[in-house]
Image (cartoon, one colour):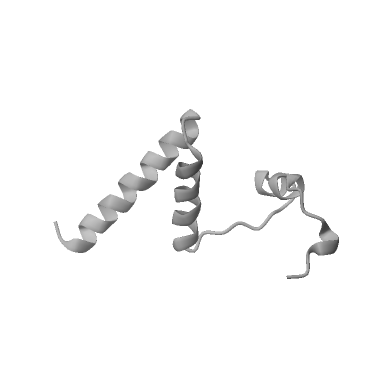
Length: 70
């Protein structure tokens, strides 16, 4: 295998391992952090839209909209 093939295989295995842990309910906080960083590093982001889990999560977070200016 070439280096790009090895990196692709490692990426695939890591991703599948994280999916398996999350779906089984066995993911730790560290696993979720790794999954979040993997998504971020690969340019994956989500726009909250009506009825999606990401919108419900954003609405459940305890942030005061008045202090939103950053």
